[in-house]
Image (cartoon, rainbow, N blue to C red; front, side, top):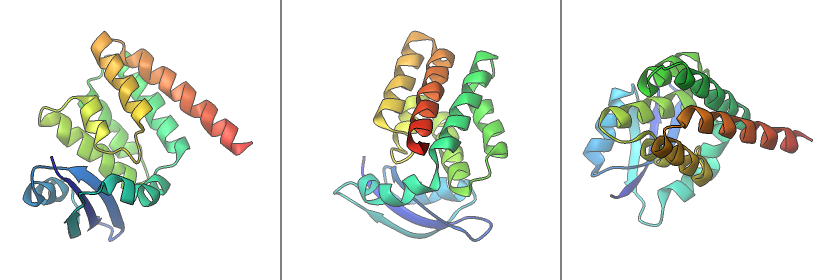
Length: 164
């Protein structure tokens, strides 16, 4: 599937950038529109849009925000809350507009039949290869709650090391 880089505006007028794999531009625009975004610019990047946008997107979701997201999702999954419902709850609680949009896109991709790990993999600037691989292992083994908890612990340790 081709990779597309996009620039969009959210309902508050804030600029949101990202990179997603989609069959075509029309599908990407429709998916973003369903998330309340107005696409300003979109282009196919055959050289890897995710790498081009990584330096911009990475700054929009802090490591601490990712720790909180992962820890809360682990707790919800452990409590028996379905992933989609957990993502809806987290979307309401996250203040970061860029992260909110990513959470909604992940939720939409899951609703369309994608696995959680595959949906995360489309947002590599935020969810690293390690993160996606561990989630995939958790899905396969039926221990997603434990894996998410371990990921949260790992990310928290990384965050603490960076702060020192």
